[in-house]
Amino acid sequence: MNVPGRALWLFFICFVFSISSCGIYTFNDVSIPDNVKTIRIGFIENKARYINPSLSAQLTDAFVKKVASQTKLTRIDDLNADYVVNAVINHYDVTTSGVSSTSQASLNRLTVGVHLTLIDNTLKDQKEYDVSSTFDFNANVSLAQAESTLMPQILKDIPDAMFNKIFSNW
Image 1 (tube, rainbow, N blue to C red):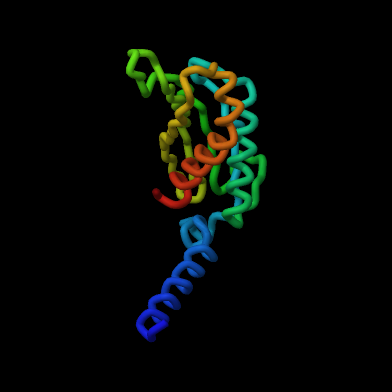
Image 2 (cartoon, rainbow, N blue to C red; image 1 turned 30 degrees about the horizontal axis):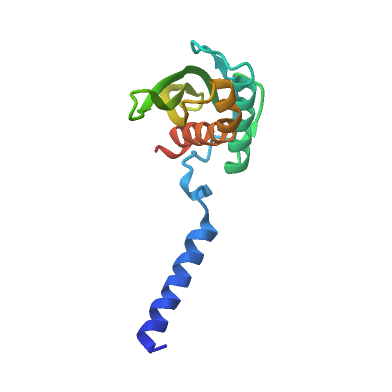
């Protein structure tokens, strides 16, 4: 291998190593003021038209774990915490997103939306955010069948979106 080829190969290896070692989320991506030390995360209520009975508890747990793993905030159950996060599942809707050549639905789309309220007790401020994600599934399966395969992705994408809205200003 010639010298320019080796240099290019070495650059590529260093680049791959640097992006793989930093991960998607680092403490550098999180913008939390130094005076914010505690957080209260309320139970995420499900007020969507269709209620998946296990989604509230699973989503709350996934978001709590995300915050715990990506920040140094201490979780407390006190409304006087530095940050208080409340959330409501306000969308859980299925629509047709693909049609076959026989004019029948071939693909359905589940949209999951969450409305967030962040109370910053250090600044006496309140902000509201909306996040949502879509999940496609085959129209030949029922929603209950689709939920069993989509749930791991829902429990990853929605807490990620919530986290990014609150802490990363994405």
